[in-house]
Image (cartoon, rainbow, N blue to C red; front, side, top):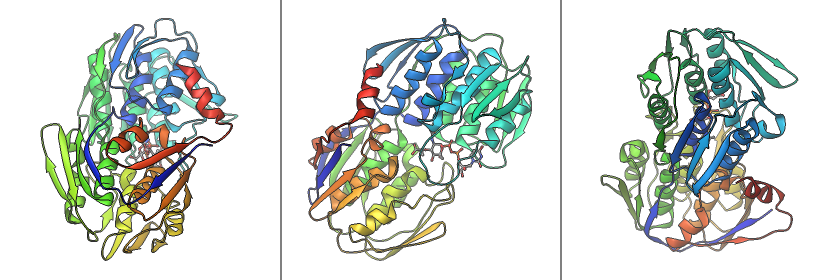
Length: 431
Ligand code: EPZ
């Protein structure tokens, strides 16, 4: 499998353009099933998970035309199947959005259990609870989720836990359910609002997205539309933290600063300079920053998907920081890799106590998952010497052209081709 080799010590300067939001695109692409027609979607990130999504959609019978690497026309008129096979579904967690979308389109869905990053148990009980509240019959047979309903009817759902996936999945089914659906204790992430805006442009009636109560009035028909995905909050945050860790002065462009407020606040607390403009933020840092405590929370709290990256920064900050993970059971696997680089971190349950060290030392490490991999890059940028990062295909699931974007900022990072990169060949074949 290919590796990244990062030689630390280079400060970052210049500007980086942020791509479309992965976690919005992974719900919006299946949502095109809700209308037999054509959608043109721009600002889609050119990443592995999007290519996998397109594979599934094409396998269902959709016509997908690439207008440019970030813009696609998707025609779902010819969709005949409601089955997403195991070989495709197990490659990513977001494949479960095809349950809600197929239920909404045809009242029938057979989707194999999803895969995804492994940081703790990832149940889908809240998704099922939501579908059943709309009158669907849901059962799991041989690790395939089968959902069906003669007629979806609006209902009330109170989620036991705040769940991004369950909120979006139930929205996908509810827009075509007869009557009013009320979703309470809903997730409020920016990508929830983006999905709601897309659905409403297709003719749905979704109100309250971005608050903890979403009301949806079902509609008979929906139609194709043109849409542009919002910028990726987590990609932007990753480059903000990279600039703080490596030092330098970076403009992160094509962002929505409001989505980054919790990250900006923590960087300022650590002593970095953060300036907000209309559609960009500037992050500058010079010398060693100081500790701060971080607790991940549902939006608008500090995002769990920024937790590993921020911990990599705190590993070299002056003082002792505490990072508490409240969303996932086991999202500290990357700490083992930071310890290999000389970090001083103690994990106790869902908290990591990080005693800042003056510097990290380059070492061979691996990407345990998408965001853990980003954390390894950040650690490597700040470390003394070279850091080799394995399993970088996990990083490329969610970061468009991370090598090119970092190199343009002055980072010394290169890709070392290793034999037999089967997964990359398969993905590239898709589009
Ligand atoms: C989405 O995952 C994101 N993935 C994750 O980002 C992100 O970490 C997560 O939301 C939280 O923001 C995508 O959007 C594709 P959840 P999701 O349902 O929807 C529990 C990344 O790096 N839960 O909000 O799977 C669950 O176990 C990825 O881009 C249930 O108990 O997360 C967790 O503890 C990694 N029952 C909590 O809720 C359910 O039915 C939040 O999970 C569903 C979830």
